[in-house]
Length: 366
Image 1 (tube, one colour):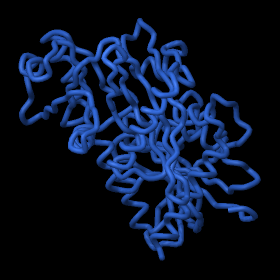
Image 2: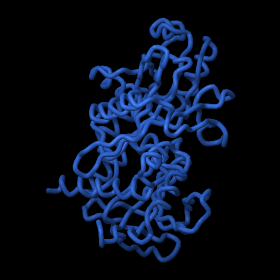
Image 3: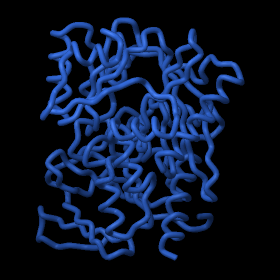
Image 4: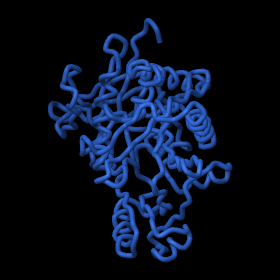
């Protein structure tokens, strides 16, 4: 990419409960894109599903996030290849113009975003984009399917069962199946800890399922691993296919939250401690890195992913929790922070992600 300015479409927002997290991630990625190297256009998808061209000042305060205005020019992706967007200024004389770009960075989280939906749209449009393809995105987003694939591959996972609205399971049966009265309930297709609850009684279980079913028709019920450490690794695929894994990091939720909830992540400035790198010896760190590579390959991920683990240190067990193919990219998110601790700045990280996307697209086109 040296010597050539790259036209980037930064796609964010979306019809998801993680819409606000996406806005924050987009702001951070936008600042990481070097203004002397990239021509960046921000495309915001509103909660109603409309695409808009977003005007943002690079010099805005660090805490500011891009706003998706209903009055902004609307955007339509033209599935004819060549990286074209048509934007229509509905506030003026209904004029339209083409906006050309080389690559799309989808900084989007949750259903209709990182579950293969937006990847499918970009595949149909025959444009380069950052991150995993349709299949891996869909598989990793559905925690039930992802865990089944990892289990079949012999990878260690947190014991779980799934339940759906057609045949919901009772607390008694769930506790019996998992061998514990202490359970976690979460929507199968969501992230950022939205809709996640802990249950230790029939009443808490009923309330937890009701909350999770607000976001998804399928929920995951897992063993609560009391006292287990929460360890995360960032994975990056290079242009040539080599897979790099960052130093592991650790999340220590504040005791008042009980677990790493949405509030602890995004609303409480002191909701959790982020230990980067994690307090692990070299052998332990290598085990997490090796397992992260295996998970990345088993699910067919590309470009990037964040792999989350539980570490039952007393029993010496490493267990895979979940996989995020479009991990949070906010200023406090673990994915970029782990790479910074591993010697890769956010600007260089974005460069590598874009290079991988362009190379993959060129390879597929050939």
